[in-house]
Amino acid sequence: MSKPLFVKKNKNIKSPLNYIGGKYRLLNQIMPLFPRKIDTFIDLFAGGCNVGINIKANKIIFNDNLTYLIELFQIFKNSNTTTIINHIENRIDEFKLSKTNEKGYKEFRNFYNQHKITLDLFVLIAYSFNHQIRFNNSHEFNNPFGKNRSSFNDTMKYNLINFILKLQKNDNEFIDNSFENFDFSQLTKNDFVYCDPPYLFSPPFLWNKL
Image 1 (cartoon, rainbow, N blue to C red):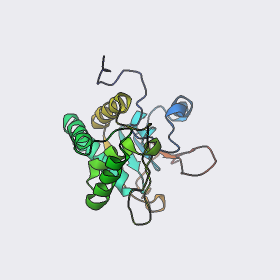
Image 2 (cartoon, rainbow, N blue to C red; image 1 turned 90 degrees about the vertical axis):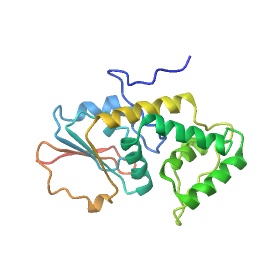
Image 3 (cartoon, helix red, strand yellow; image 1 turned 30 degrees about the vertical axis):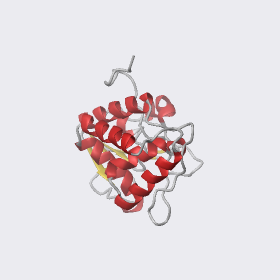
Image 4 (spheres, rainbow, N blue to C red; image 1 turned 90 degrees about the horizontal axis):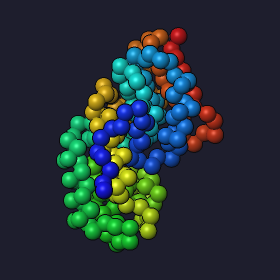
């Protein structure tokens, strides 16, 4: 029996992306540290959006300097769920993607790098090693094939649909700035900035503008 395609009440939403440093498993430790009432929540290093997607705030701003990632989230926000799933499944059929078809994966990776169709990035991630996102200096996706491990399985589909439904329910904005260029000038004491810089061996930094 397939899993229900709806958001469960009182349950944290898991990002469909296996982003390095994702905080899904730590949400129950992190979220009690936040203020109870937040006007605008800024997820300054959004990554897979595991934190921001689960926050109760009047508005949520997701910022990440990886433009391709922000464009993908904008597609999730503005597109019909059925349309997204159909695109994914059609690509899987077109390139015969599976856990074992490395040739098909490489052909699809070349196709994505040539055409940069935004939603194709998610399909590519689904079959890449550990579902990870990796680009080279030429902005080409270069993560290897996830042989015998990675695929667009029922769990990934379930997480994607629930993520999209929650994303479309909230008031969100997506920005692809470097954190150094982010405009903090309009923030008030009712806003909250969450900073979880990548590749730092330190706990997330929480900041209220006073």
